[in-house]
Amino acid sequence: MMSPRRQSRIVAIQILYQIQLTTTPVSDVLKQFWRSQATSVELRPFATQLVEGTAEHLPVIDDVLQNTSKNWRLHRMPIVDLSILRCAIYEILYIDDIDPATSINEAIEIAKSYSTPDSPKFINGVLDNIRKKHRPPILEHITLEKNQLPV
Image (cartoon, rainbow, N blue to C red):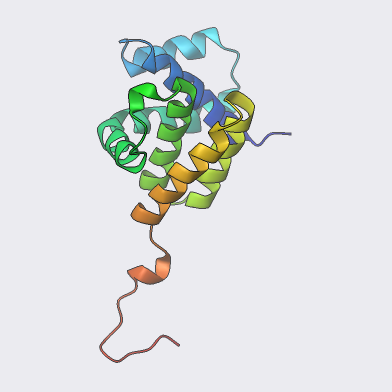
């Protein structure tokens, strides 16, 4: 059985896909999606957080994505991959209580089901580079007094 979080991520990616294809405001796309789809009420809060957060931070997310995937322009990426990447990047950059490795793994697994055979490897490479640049290991955040060694 698929976890509720993964189901929420899939719903969020479906909504982000729709948003990419329209000029309709995010709030209206969300309302229309909830009306037209038989989505469990328990999936909505996390899916909504992912959609609204991704939309709110889209300029930063797209800048990070473009700078990381130098050989790929965003408009050339399949919309499914772009939606998966944007959602995962939002998680990595803005949701501190989700381990970036979890976000990357979830994106890869969703890509295996919803995108091309080459997409999981591409998504893994892009997201891992973003994780390394923007979410350094916890030890790098610890500042030590002069000549103090960790115990």
